[in-house]
Amino acid sequence: MKQSILSIVMMTFVLTAVSGQKYFTKTGHISFYSETKLEKFDAHNKSASIVYDSETGKLEAAALVKGFQFEKALMQEHFNENYMESNKYPKATFKGAIENFETIDLTKNGKYAVKVSGDLTMHGVTKKVMTDGQIVVNNGKVEATAEFNVVLADYKINIPSLVKDQIAKTVKIKITSALEMLKQ
Amino acid sequence: MKSLILPVFLLLVSSIHLYAQDDLLGLLGEEETTDYTTASFKTNRVINLHSLENTAGGVLDFKISHRFGTLNGGFYELFGLDNASIRLGLDYGVTDRLTVGVGRSSFQKAYDGFVKYKFLRQSTGKRNMPITAALLLTSAIQTLKWENPDRDNHFSSRLYYTTQLIIGRKFSESFTLQLSPTMVHRNLVKTNAEKNDVYALGAAGRIKLSKRIALNAEYIYLLPNQVADGINNSLSAGFDIETGGHVFQLHFTNSTSMIEKGFITETTNSWSNGGIHFGFNVSRVFTVKRRGDN
Image 1 (cartoon, each protein chain N blue to C red):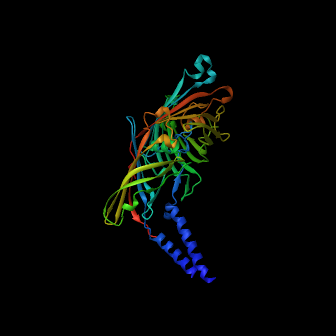
Image 2: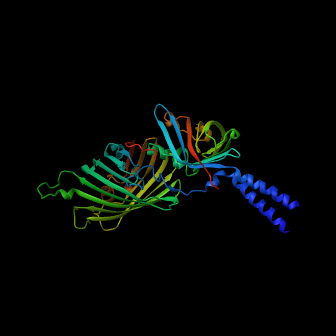
Image 3: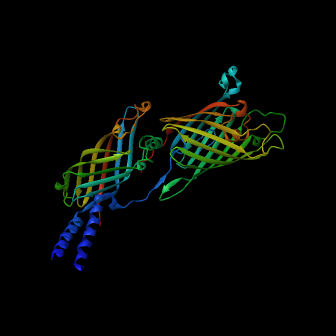
């Protein structure tokens, strides 16, 4: 008798775990932008991975630093070589959660304001970030956007004094992505 | 006993599941990508030799290069600074793998042009390639007045061609090494003893000292009995200093010429007697064609 109770408990446990629906993309679009009087940076990465668990609100994302495309080839080389050191730190990752996940129903059409917080890791440094974003659900299509600023010095990305007028100290990071249901 | 198996099995399954949930990204599986090695050298020249790097697609690289006189000119010549030989050049990246370029040297009033194609790219990941390899074809025309104007002179006598294979590898962030087997064809040579086709093997490397400064060196070995007496192997060493859009290359070399046929087959100075030129290449890149965000 005891065993069968245990197995029922276990069974429910497993079932709940399975029922939590996950959404994902492998083609998330992350861009970063900064502008000074002398130079404008506008780089795009269109192969970011994002996974969202609607059951727990957990959200994770990762992007290859080398996947950022710049208008100028030399900028891209310097970005990888001198600033992000992408051979040493190939990935930028985010691990966090949508705080108000309970108010979001991705199966229903609507616009949802979301609060995201978590750890952003890049250039080998992890920092807490917090931002507001938006999720739009339209007939099963889920579109998520978020925007936040990052202070380069927080991530130990040093700007040499020689080019300090060309490179802004803060960059704007923008994420736009369509999420699909993950079939398990 | 049997009744225990089910709960234990379920426990295992659920624990695996819980573990997987901890790593959401793990659910997507790791997709393998190809990671091409970049920035093996700061620019597409080591010093005189072409490096295994190309000018990026859509980028124009304007090169201003000087070789001063030799250090053994002493104080009278301000250690060579009184004289300078100049080459102005334009390199253009047609694609990331194909570069074309033209130049004009004051030495021998030579015009030169080249085509360089990178046919193997060092990479790791999905596509694994240990080396980068490129083929370089250059031609040069020297336009000095004829030495013997009375003689029957042919235009073709002014022409030189170089075929060079560049094979190299970026061994680590800070160390790159390349070999450049070369054949220089000279349409006209002075004596029978000199060969029209000259074979040489170049070797070049760099050590990155900091994010923006690298130490470069190159040596070109001429196979014996091909050139006139008094021609030496070319040896050069110097620093690459990068500042945003510019790369400054400051170096010492025993070669006066900055084009293949010259520094490979016509280097008359020697390090041993102070026949060393101080020189520099300044490279300034302009993005002509912006890359679409693909």
